[in-house]
Structure formats: structure tokens, C-alpha cells
Length: 272
Length: 358
Image (cartoon, rainbow over all chains, first blue to last red; front, side, top):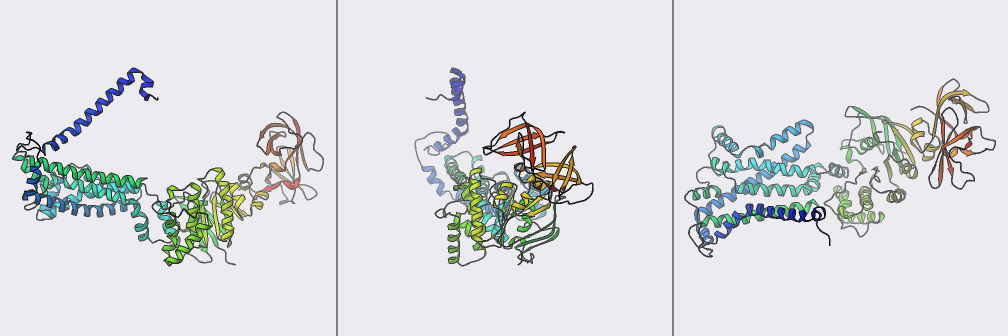
């Protein structure tokens, strides 16, 4: 039998070390996931107080489906997320391809500028966008401004993810295709796009997830008639946390787990 | 007959450096032609110029007598086999090979026939459905060859294609490549820094150094009759002696170097008191306790080193004034000298050659 490396090196001290590390890991995971587990458990509570256990029940899920206000907010959120993601994926992918064609210092500078929205605090971006919409563009605040605002930060994320994928692209593949008579367009559709596709899809899933739970920016640039789910929940919580919100949060958690799993599967399947 | 590829006065500057200077080459149809030189000699840039990935600053490149015309240069009937093969990783072997034909919009049935034929030629039948990452280095190499050959180009350019393979596989692939080129009759231009590879495979070799072509010739000409010091030194092993030329008798000239006089055959190249370089290959040097007569060059010396190389032994002999000559002695010859032995070393005047400085 092979003893673990620490045991062989440190004897009984090694066993103590391993135990300590195990306990530490358990605590960290507990810290991360215990609140979520509590939330999920209480979404099945029969009590009408969010923090009191009142026996198993799915009534809050049923009530949720009858809540027209929440359902309309969900619809707005989904429309917003899909539109922003489509826009951001096209723009971000084009930007990543364009940036790669540049050489030297200009490229570094432009790349940094492009990824700035990722680093800038949401609050700053939110105020800036609001000012721009109201003062400069003089747009009616609503779903339109929401879509534009979400596209802005999502584009930066897509460009970052696609750019990372493009970094691993061997330029000689492009030369090989050109050499065999392909046009630039054929190189793009037959060689580049299939190879970079996982990056584009990953970027799209990321921006979908980011758009779905964006609160600060939405809060600033939204207008009458366009309430997103996070904003609706925020105003509900102000009146007190109900088990309905627990149920909604559990459903959203499931949705994001599915998105994250898809993204990981796509990335790992193609990176081999 | 129109040459397959013709370069006249081609020059190219990259990054402020002249990497190719005044290159003239004429490569015949069906020839296996090698560009040989150390790294940085401009051979790969020359290849990329022919492929059309670079455009020459000076001079012209003609493929079968035609200039680039209005199409992009890389669209010409020249295909490149890349150093790392550059196979499309998301396509099967079949799709990789068919790619060029599809770009030419050939009919489906013809594509199927051509791809099948070329895969049989490079012995890849049964691997059509595999992806490049599922193939060995040698197999990937053959896919790259098939992909370049299938569109029936005027010229196939190969950029150190065997560099990534291990020694044993490389020797096998050398033979296979040469056989493939014979069978297809396609002109190959082969870039390598490996002189043994170039000698073994080529019909003709151009030796390049610092952006220039120093000598073009058959492997025998390059090896037996090098024209410059670099060519003599780079191809195989040799003894180089610098000295002054003196006229001698009997169609022989003498070179005086470090107080020693060496006879060189082949007639005088020059009359005067000229600085020259003499080269003589180690296999032409004979070493023994006492040599028979008949050798124009014969010196007494001392063995300073002797290295065993399997089929032969490399013996280093000092003949005075610090001049050390290397002699290749085949194993199995009667007497094998040891370091410290007093010996004689000699060679015929005809085995030595005068070369020009580069």
C-alpha cells in the first residue's frame, strides 16, 4: 500500500496535516454553499414566513406561476438577456477578430480600452450610461436603453473570451487554407469560425448569465414599463422576504447551474 | 523548356534586415531541389516568397514562366507543406485532403476519386475518418503531403518537413519522400538545414548563406567541388588551410601555409602571390607509420586524438606549426594509430581544392 506523500514525509504529523486541510476545505465549502442550501430548503416550507419551517410544501412554486407581475418581469428579463447577448456576441466577436489583426503597441492599448467596462465599477458605468441616454442621445428610458446598456458590458466580456480563444489560433492554418486556394471569407467560415466557435458560445453564455442578474445598471437606465426580475425582487424584498422569493431564487439558481454546466461542457469538449 | 520556378535578382528586407539578396535560381520541371543553409540564411524566406506569402522588394519570381498576375500570389499553383504540417485540427484526414479540391469547386465525384487515389499513394487508406490529433507524427506528415499534392500543383514547397520527427522515422521518411516525388513527377523545393538530408534526397542543391546563394549543383558537385569556403565547411567535414598561392610544376600549384607547402591539382587558378583557401576532405587523407610513395603531399606528424565512430575512426594529426589535420580511417584497416604515435599523413594533389572566401 502506498501511503500519501505527506505521511511518508512527516509520519504522524502528516496525518494531522491532512486532517487539518480536510476540515478547512469542509468549512470553506460550507461557508459558500450553506446559505444556498438553506434558501432551497425553505423554498419548500409550508409556512408563510420565509424564515420559519412549516412542513414540506410546493405551494410557493404554484403561487409563483400565478404571479402576473413576476412573470412579466421574467419575460422582460429574458427578452433583454437574449437581445443583449445576440448584439454583444456579434459585436464582441468582430472586435476580437479585428483586434487580433492589429500589431504592436496600438493593439495592447486598444485591447485594454476594450476590456475597461469589465473593470469599471458597475455604478460608474450605470451613471455614465444614464447621463449619456438622457443628456446626449435623449432616448426614452425603457427596454431599448436596457438592451443597449447590457450590450455594452457584455460585448467586453465576449471580446475577452473570444480573444483568449483566438490567441491559441495558429496563423499558419490561415496561410495553409489561403495556399490551397481559399478566399478570406472561406478561411473565416471554414477554418476560423469552427475553431473559435467554443469561445464564441462560451462568451454568449457568459453574457446571458451576466445580463440575467444585472441589477445596478438596469436600475439606473430602466424606465416605466420595463421592470426586470432583479428590480422586481428588490422591490418585493423591501416589503419583506416571502417564501415566493425563495422559490424564485431556487429556480434561477437551477437555470444558472444549467448555463454554467453547458459552458464548461462546450469548452472542455473542444479544447482537447 | 520553361523552368518550373525562376527567380531573378530577388531581394527581400524584413524588419530592417536584408534577409534575401540578389537570388537567382532556375528550378527545372520535375526536379527535387533543396535550399540548404544554417538557420537565418534566408532559405525559409525564399520559400515563402515562392509560395507568395511574401512579395519580393526586388527582382521577379516566375512559376512556369508566368508572373503573379492579378490574383494574390499565394493562390498560384504552388502548395506549401508547413514545418508543423498546419493540418486543420477540426477536420478529418479526408476533409483536410479534400480541402484544396473543394476550393477549386471540382465536382463531388472527382473529389472522391482524387482523394482516394492520393491517400492510397501516401499509404493512409483506412485513416480517412481520423482527426489529426489521433495520428502519429509520420502519419500527419503524410496527410500534409497528400493535401499539398492532391490539387496537382506545379510545385510543392516543403519547409523542413521532417524536422519534428525522430531520427529513425526521419531516415524512413527521406526515402519515402524521394520515392513519392519520383512517382508523381512533381517539382519539389525542399528547405532544410540538414546537409545529410539534402545530399541524400536532392537532384540539385542551392547552398545559402546570409541571404545569398553561394553555389548550385548536384550533391556530388557540392560535396566534391565546393567553390567557397562556406560550402566546403558546411557540407560534410573538411580540413581548411589558408595560405599563399605559388606556381608549381607539372600542372600543380603550391600553397604555402604556416611555413608548410601543399600541392594542389587541377591547374593554376591564378598566377600571382594570392591569398587562397585550400580544402581537403578527411576521407582523402591517409595515415600510417610509413606511407608508400606516389602522394604529392606527405608530412610527418603526431596523433593528437582518435575518436571511434563505429564504421570509421577520426584521427587528428598534428603536422607542425600547430596545423592539425583530420583523417577518416575506415575500421578494419591494418593499423590503427593511437594518440602519441608518430605517423605520416598524406593525400594526392588531386584530392585538394582551392576555394574562394565567401
